[in-house]
Length: 156
Image (tube, rainbow, N blue to C red; front, side):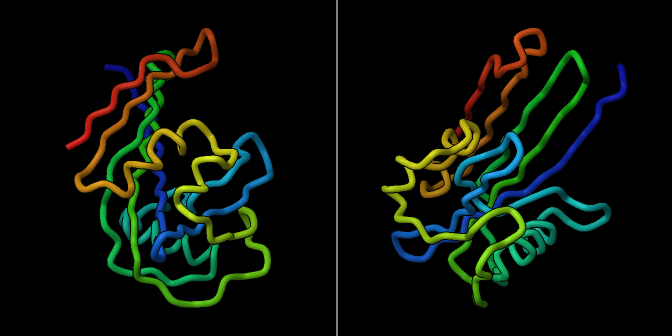
């Protein structure tokens, strides 16, 4: 078996009643409204990473994160596996900065969020944060076409 390149990220949806906190990200090729999150730094735990990323990107301190699921991209040609661990929490405190490093943090009504510009990967899992149970979504990357190939969604 060839060497596989694993990259691990987190996403943490912060919910306050019928609103969620999203970042209006307007740089690089990941534009759109996204929940806070980022790369897991070795050797921190995955949940510690989610808490740290929220603090760095929004100024908020979160606690009691609930695991919602795994979203991953696999590229059989390059042997890359990108794993994104997804959490949600309703417990937070602190002050939002005027402008964060990844974009302006804004409270958005959950129903209105569906009309906002979002990356397909965020849009695909967005409703799953608010359902009971957990999800696992795997996207096989089509290297030749440079786009998503087969998408498998499992929800329990």
